[in-house]
Image (cartoon, rainbow, N blue to C red; front, side):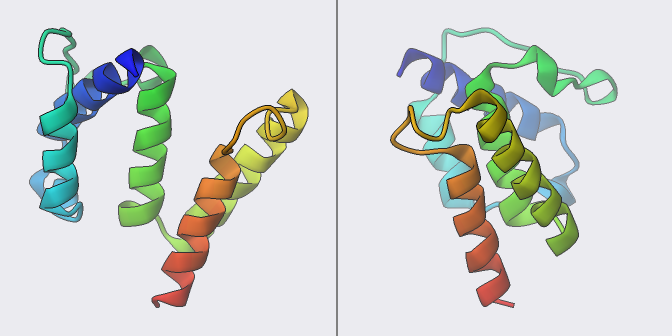
Length: 117
């Protein structure tokens, strides 16, 4: 839970440096959700020119990936990410150790996105 609140803080910080035309594709309610629940004492700072998600928390990467797939990706990008996460989970055998898996979530997002087109 602690990392989740820090991840929300990192997401808000990242969104603050992205172009507004990209951020406006995310529902304001979701941004507000992150903002309301973020750890306000956790300090992080990112620059647009040097943004590297590898320097963020794992939870931040997962949230950002979900945002990317849901609001910014093409169908082809979504399918590639889904395949990547499925392969990662097979290699790490993580899909059986967790009550949810990233690839399951991404598949649901992809299916919903495809259904709504």
